[in-house]
Length: 131
Image 1 (cartoon, rainbow, N blue to C red):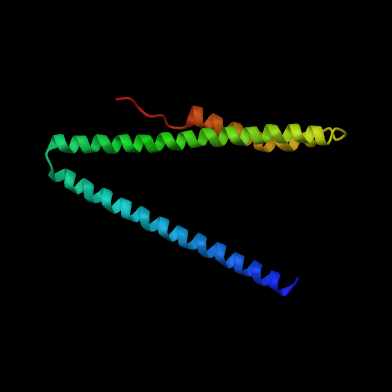
Image 2: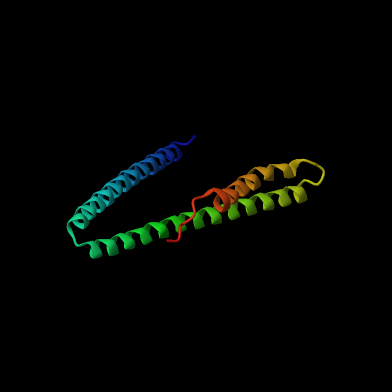
């Protein structure tokens, strides 16, 4: 392996792992700040009049429901994409290897993973409650 290529590969690996480490650290700090501010908000709500506190709690509940809805929609989209990849892979392998009767079966892995994601999203994932 030529020396410049080896240096490039090592520098790339160091850069990628440094980015991942810094990103994880920053994300953890953001979560800590969010938890701290949410705790401070609860302290202030305990000291405020009941009607104002109820309005703020309703807003927070709506925000939490919207977050759960986005997660559920993301799982639906992920399940549909993985299912489509599995179907496409099965069709492509069937057309590209017509003499191999079982090559298409490789597409069953992503297909079944996508189906499991969709089934979980529609049947088992917690649904929002209407009050």
